Amino acid sequence: MHDLLRCLGWHIVRGESPNLPGKRSRLWLDDDKGRSSWFFEDARNVLMDNTGTTAVEGLFLSLPEKEEIPLNSDPLFGFWRRNSDPFLSMSKLRLLKICNVNFLNVRLSNPCENLRLSEWHECPLKSLSSWLVLGQLVELRIPNSHIRTLWDGSQVKLNMLVRMDLSNCRYLTMTPDLSVAPNLETLILEGCTELSKVHRSIMELRRLDLLNLKGCVSLKELPDVINLPSLQTFILSGCTNLGKFPRIVDHMDTLSELYLDGTAIQDLDLSFGYLRGLVLLNLSGCKNLRGLPFSVGLMRSLKYLYLSLCSRLETLPEQIYYMSRLEELDACETAIKEFPEDIFLGSQNLKLLCFHGCSELRLRRHAPWGRAPFLTTLNLGGCNLAEGDIPDEIDILYLLQILDLSENNFLSIPRSVCQLPELREISVRGCAKLQSLPSIDPPSIKYVDIRGCTALGNNYSDRWRILPDGLRIRNCPRWDDRHPPSGVEFHQFHRSLP
Image (cartoon, rainbow, N blue to C red; front, side):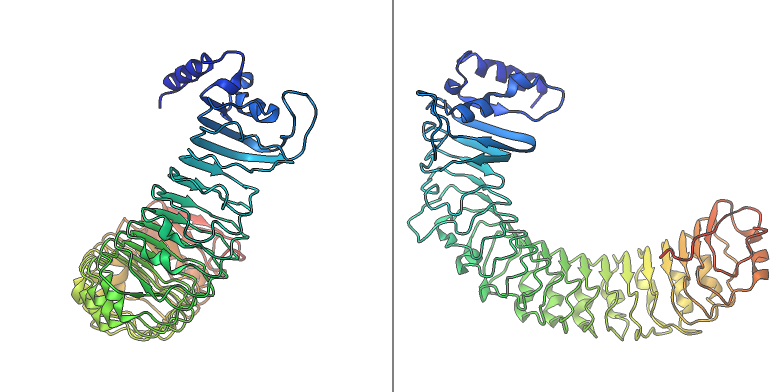
């Protein structure tokens, strides 16, 4: 909304009752800088003085910094009373937003039955049982709150509830029966560190499109089966005690992003193949993961597969051949031994391959590199490559831009590597046995990292005179930087840098 139009609306609302803010339909405290503060103090004053009426339909009290506000004065007799409810007289309230406010000596006893939006950051309530007799509620947002239970039993009917944000509610230990909210589309439980159990109904919400359980470190298990036909994004990142993913009982073609990184999952069920619409699968940091099911070959839409730090993962299934749309495969720091050459035969859209730290990885001399015409990033650092292990056929990767061969044991690298026409960055950092580098011909190369290449002699700097202008070199300790070659921007980096 344009600022002028919004300001016009504010003036109209103030005109409803110029002298008594409690009789206006909307009250607000705007935290935007540069505005006249007296003009936007209505919400604070009405709550502090307890002067709200049935005319109030919307109340936004959003402060730039945390503030304590006492709400215990009697507007008729002028003395202080305990346990006053500032919302008692605002029975027609539809929109409520409270942020950075801590009410003192207040008891919220009466629900606002007409609420559509309830957003209360750091809500002091421990239960919503009394407030959620609300058939009109559409959005419930109470992040960082003291909530322990939402509601008891199934007497609550929340047919209009679409979005629920309970992020960082550190006292919440379990979710209630969510069948009372059949139209729920978004459920955010991120950072609920004490959440140990979720009700089985959470896996049967037919309209749910976002389920976020990130960082629920106490969660050990989910319901046995999952059937969420509308789900698009499922986040379980950082659920460090979660050891099993539910069995999928039907096709979930709408699910496009699944985050299981940092979980304790050991195996994936064969029903994983039902996720045929999956675009991104993140399993990074699953240190107990032993393998992928062969049914992953059915996930023909997968573009991004992240497996880094899966330290027990030794092989990739041959069915990876069927992932024809795969663009990025990150398998850094895994125990993979065989280079997945089948991936070249199936996917011609590969742009990134990363196997850094796979110390037992074996490369075949005549791998079909030509089947990856769009590959732009290749990381084979820390793969324990010896002299002759780098295949000559790598020169067919005409679009390769970034090549990482760091921390290996070869004595030299093939001349063809430095003749790739689009190559911009090459790293041989930490290759302590490297004795020579070929001439680098293409003008596209702008960055070379040779830190830690202690076997490169001081007199080798003369061979860099042919390099293009603007080339940046990160040097090794023995490199002679007293007379840097012409046309080269030479950089001396501190040895403590990574």
